[in-house]
Length: 162
Image (cartoon, rainbow, N blue to C red; front, side, top):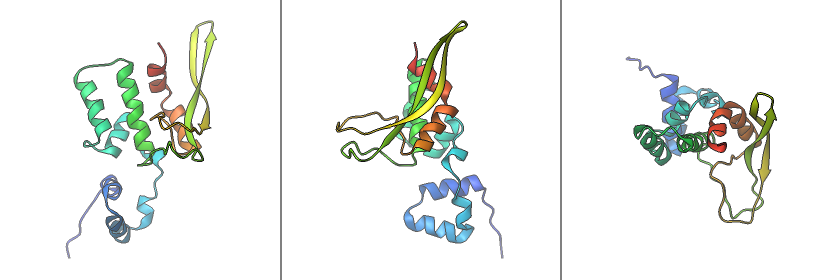
């Protein structure tokens, strides 16, 4: 009998992209435990978020266009935050018509100091709205908003401040 070798990263990527039946097949072959990694463990950088979403994702393509055009302004940082947010939310999209569904986002503190301004993660916030239009940078949970605010403070700072 011939053995096949697959990296955990490749198995997780296949699982993320698989249909429901494909996920069941992979879990039966490799065990469910292989796929129980938290998204926060997989996404530590923009590159990790890009890997998670894949090159065919529209937001990844927009990010790569900015990189190719050598745009390094707040626009690139904002697109980085969009890619990160989308990856961390694992397919969840806010339902802006559902005012009972909480949407979370990181909350930052801008303080003055003798050495200049300080920008730091402060807390998370949740909100609901009756609006049918909203932010694409919200998260499905308090934990994800808190993680994004702490892990990606510099990205938020670069697109939120002048």
